[in-house]
Image (cartoon, rainbow, N blue to C red; front, side, top):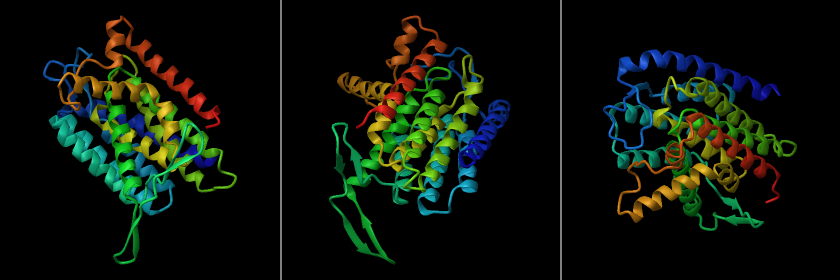
Length: 323
């Protein structure tokens, strides 16, 4: 058990103490979410709150990865991709980047990870069997033999960007998203543990999931209502890592979709709703599920517990369904 306890504890400690430091330092660097000056229509808080937590997420994940995981191409790529995601998150929290620019940067971030060999050669079908994505292969000789799997790589790119942004869209209520991330990482770790007996490499994935749990748990202490700090756009660091874990844990994309069913469905509905209204799907509004629940007089704590309970139930289903 020690192989995952140490990464979890170290990540938790860095996230906890890093959050304390950032709460005091963020205002000095202009990293504050001020509803009085914000143009986003979906803001729910009334007072300025420190943000820019992508710095904390990076510090509680990437250095721990480097210290505890093998020096392999895929883990180097993941660390580089998470670093890029953290930079994008902090820049957006500071300068309020265009959502189109953010989307482009998200794809570049995902491309770093996919380029390091994190691809989806197949996905499990909820109706049984697998759906191959590696039927088309382009091979070339450039300082050694290399292969490109266009369908698999494109699917992985879209998957990582989609999950990262849907998780960001579900961070509207205090404590809402850290809880979802914790449950997702725990379920993916438990799924990986099932294959340990014949695939020792799963140990590295369990470590990675433990690091993600620690990062989210340490931050949740300060993000629970009333929040002392917001994740900001840096939450895509968690989203990118969760999406990548689903790929590495035996292409458990369908499993991750089930665990994240509530935020992913809310995000998909939001996209179609905006398109039907003739608006850009990337511009925020006040139509997410958590906004509807606020309007129905649910408290922020009740909404967070609703999302957390939903993730627990769906995670339990994912662990017990045979397909």
